[in-house]
Length: 204
Image (tube, rainbow, N blue to C red; front, side, top):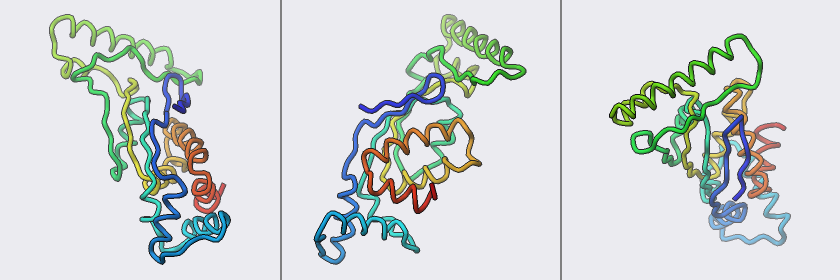
């Protein structure tokens, strides 16, 4: 399992992958019942599909991924705005929250107060649990810097849509770090498609 550390306590890992570059080629060639004469023909086909306008998104939807993610809640809430995929998240209704929260590395005014506030919120959370509060109510005192975990199942087209948005310089820095990690995994497991996407769409 390819787990990549992100931020101070987070990570992203590829748990399962289906199809790869071959799935894109198969989906494209079935339309015309064509066959490649060489592997270079398939590479050129993927690049042509990636560059096409209007886009041929359906051929990329036959490759799929399942990722595991550990990230701050505020990153997860942004992530889950991308709806053409499937999520299942750790529930603080059923699980106790670990005392883990995102702490920025930069030394800046208020950082110590931020840390004290997060620690105090966990102190209160744990006291409420001990006093008999239900977990789903006690969690209300925790902030969005608390770490969560979720599973993300997504096809290659939706993955690229997410990458294009979350790698943009206007995206929040913390979310961009997850996108960079996922792009690295994408380049390893679908090298032809990912390289074409990086060059032709991201312009990198």
